[in-house]
Length: 132
Length: 117
View 1 (cartoon, chains in turn yellow, blue):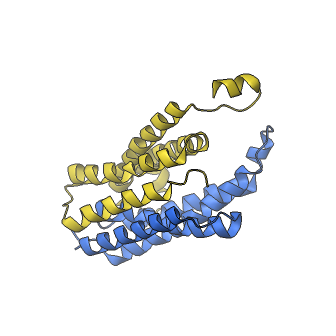
View 2 (cartoon, each protein chain N blue to C red):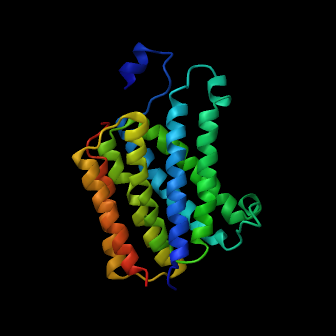
């Protein structure tokens, strides 16, 4: 990666392999935090009160975190190996499930655990071919 | 607390609208060059961001009621639409892994549907 940037000093910034992995992992945590904030603030949201997106602190915070994690994720996915990064992306489903149980006292059952596990594996399989 | 079907429907609608957001971002990204105007005056990117915002409105309406343990993983239905649009608009082929991954995702969504009670 550094060799490429040395050959083309004017080319745009690239992440190394390890940086992409770390960045995607960080994005899943940011994204999960965004989900918890959005759920917390969603009660104050309606079609008659779309402005809650900017006036409700939880919703606004959720949007900001979601926006940051989306932009970073796009940059990381651009440079990294998708077959490795997709399984990491799907970790966000695990974080949100764990946090929902801890923070909102949601109950787990066998089908929920089966469902989220199957989806996590499915997303990982989806990315297995790499870029093609 | 059970998760109402209306909430699941709104989350599916969010996933559908969001999949078009990704298509426009991809079209828009292809028009990016070293000129900042290709970013700021890029109607495709703007449309992509707008569709993501619209998608988030459906999503917020969906998660007002019901459980995040059910509704958040259901956003993964969006992968199905994205696979279809990627083939339709960008000629990306269906591969065995994509089909298997999509099948697992759909199965997972069915499990969540059973577990929502």
